[in-house]
Length: 163
Image (cartoon, rainbow, N blue to C red; front, side, top):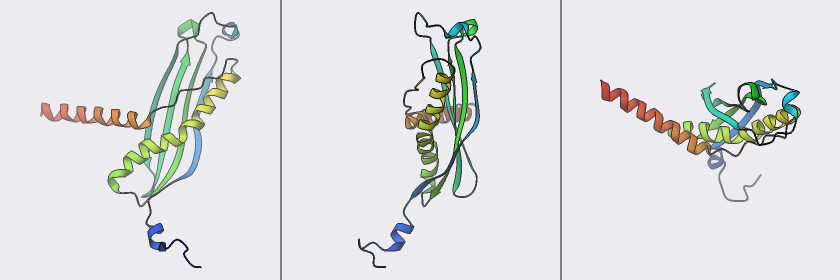
């Protein structure tokens, strides 16, 4: 078959590729500890807390598992409305990506792809618990990655300064 755009097959064969192989929920829990007392309409909006963590591990020379961990809830102590913890993962294949770009691609693009699915799982669980759905605001995974990189560099500089 003729190549209509004039590109040779070797150019597309060597093009960088980032593919999603699979996505899955590794662990999920939702707690509604004070129901039904807390299901009544609230006088004021509860304080929402949320922690986000991203981890990755290499499965093969080209495959990486990215784990997006969301943990949070509304209210605290005896007034807690709900709590959740979600570990949502994906396996990604990286091909023809320069070695110095692998970590940023895995730690930024991986969670960026996973986040909308994790967000929907949390929203539906909160709604199923009797509350309005909790739609987590979009997350700047590039900023999170750069912040983590700066912290690691600061720690390393602190350790070399003590030697």
